[in-house]
Length: 283
Image 1 (cartoon, rainbow, N blue to C red):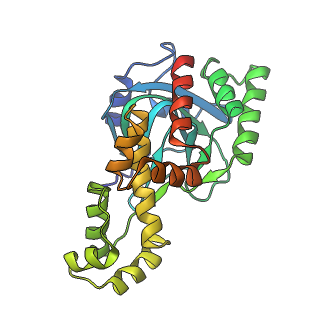
Image 2: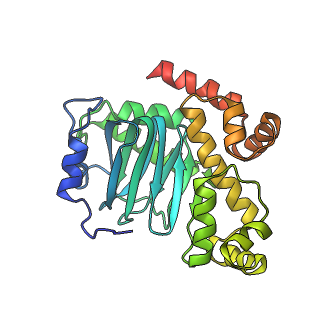
């Protein structure tokens, strides 16, 4: 990946400025939020399905959150799926790109310091969601507004208490494992065993197992499940059926898919879709 060194390239900021915003009086240029006097700044934006923000970084820590739509955020060695009710916390200086899956209504927070040592996906509670929405109604510079300052403090408290979720997809550097991972990311419906897949790419299953543990930090089956759920979340957010998502992601039945989905996300696919409908009604 061709990563830039500039924290916020002018052409990226101009690209972002061309999109519609929920609050017309606010800037949609990320660089305008990096040096504000308050500790937390929030930017509201809308993006069309398929829009991509090129690799860039920011001076401040960033919390990427979408009221609706799914974001896929990538760095040189990792990838995350960020559905509604989830947010991605990125430490300052982290080079990343963002792809929009569906119509995305983004609320991105730029924070002076969170103490985060690495990126992580956080659960967005109803309280945190409402606090972010309220702060988005305040002026860009709210340093002389005691109420807005208190809301920002509460946001930081809620972020500290938020549950971290395993929604990252580590990306390998070994060429053999890269081929395997790309095969599954392009077609998550595959049910072939590691032994069969290993034979197709000319490596042993034992070698790939060792590489998975070393480069991905998890077993092959766990990594494949994360890829499947990444695709499933995007499909469900687009309004596709549970049956279609289950089939496309390699599950033998909707019930098997629902069981695995609930174990990871704490709710069924039906529950996820119901909450999506509630979010759509609120926005």
